[in-house]
Image (cartoon, rainbow, N blue to C red):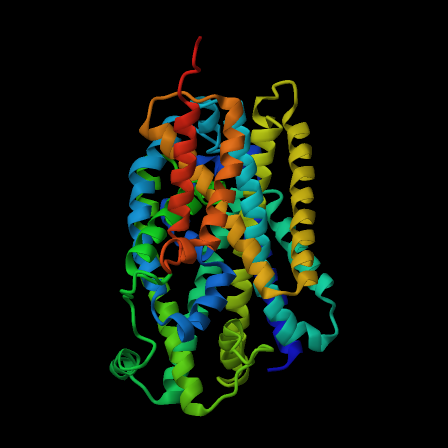
Length: 491
């Protein structure tokens, strides 16, 4: 497939996206930007959240990692389901009862200003690195397979993507994203489904043959029973549960869309519906991954390797889709990839702007400011975070070391542990804390867990931490809060 044809796909999709943006952002105001005027349709939010949850990392990486971890990732996905039930039945009623716009306002009401600010700051740090990393993965694939050939520098590619995201979110915010996420989810899923169909045709398989082929392959193992490995079932399952609670239920980007529904009942329907659909969507990505490797093995296709001779798993899907399945497959892959790129940053940019404006600038409480003045401030913050995302992505490219970048992304995940501990302590106890000590606890907890994770094999007879390190992180924060909630000793 020629680079020019791919470029036409990118431009055409962007035009369609802006048409949706123009329609949905008419008459939008600050309330539209922050919570969609609390009028979002629950089924649109549920469907659009699939694309926002999956992102470019899932689109590219999950099929690729089947060659390494088989269907082990599905253990995490099953844990997600339980986590989403906790979000629907515990967290959403809390957010609606308190009528929150920023979910971190709860920390101010429960503990005080220091707790409030550190919680919001951890979100900003996590979401900035996470969104930049997700967008980097997608843009880097496009750069490698398309824009390098056209002579377009990486800086320009990233800048254009972020500029487009900035333009279609700056006015409508959440109100717009609910609809654009729906569009993007549709194209992403269509791309994956068609890729499965194209490979089935290449291998002359029907649905029954497909299931037999995968179940009898080396890639079909789901449950892992070695307790020392990161893929041990309880680690993955309960890790997935708390990942869902922390990275969705305690994440402003994900919750901002949920609290834009008319009432808590519709928000619950949204989350519960989304959780079951997401289970099957992730299974589809894993099926695609198994098919990709089966096709590679049977067709004898060479794959890209790194300097150590290991297959670069993130390049498996794009290599097959762009070079071996025909032009139609390549077109839908590119559209699916772009659809994965935009949700990687649009919701994050909106949520980062919301948190900074509400939690740090107190924009909603500034009664002396007119609506127009508040809008100008919001625009400035929005542009500022767009430049921040651009800068972080360029730093990733400058580092050009997958190990370092993955460590940075992992570290960003550690910052959800303090949020998990803060909300758990607030909801499960009635104790007060020494508010000015809370930031110290929240900073020390990830550091302690990071060091514990590094030396776990030596300390725990070969035990390797996986996703359950998030649970440990939250528990350490909880314990720290319990300690500083004790009354001061008197003489």
